[in-house]
Length: 246
Image (cartoon, rainbow, N blue to C red; front, side, top):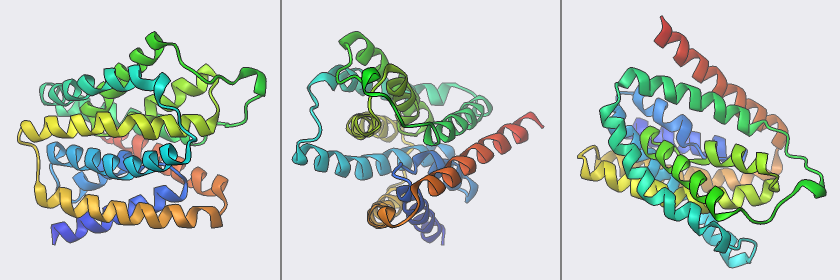
């Protein structure tokens, strides 16, 4: 029964978040925990979902020639070891603190989703200096492994603040997140935090939900759906902080 519930949650959340063009991992972790999946097992499931969903988007971007990965290898290279380090840290930090950090990350993710995307041509950039790219990869990978979410909540606002175009930010995020998610997933596997049945049920369902949501996203009002997603995440994060404070 639990596997059916997990599959349903993964499908529904992936479909809903794909309507807004974003990943569902940040919502999937607390949803899995709410139905009885331990935190240590929910995080690797979410990371595996990231690999499947965003990896497919990156393959499409590379084949279409829209994405040039060359300038972003420092980001990827530094995120690879940072994610397992974050996974290890998650076992050393008290769960109450981790839950508080996750709640703050949910609020940040909501703010990122509803951020203004309009930029003047004079402020846009096409490349990131290696040092900045490496630092961003280290931080995003660490957060990704520690909380079991993609590093998009770190990458997106950082690149937006640097003046990159919204479309390029989305492609860079889809490129970088699967790498750190994969090494983070492997770290949780080595730590014995993996449930193969839960991973299989969630990843297959999330992949199907994400594909259907991506096909449907062009038929709806993007601003409205992204506003709903953002408010849902921020409300959930605030509710989590309220419960922790009480």
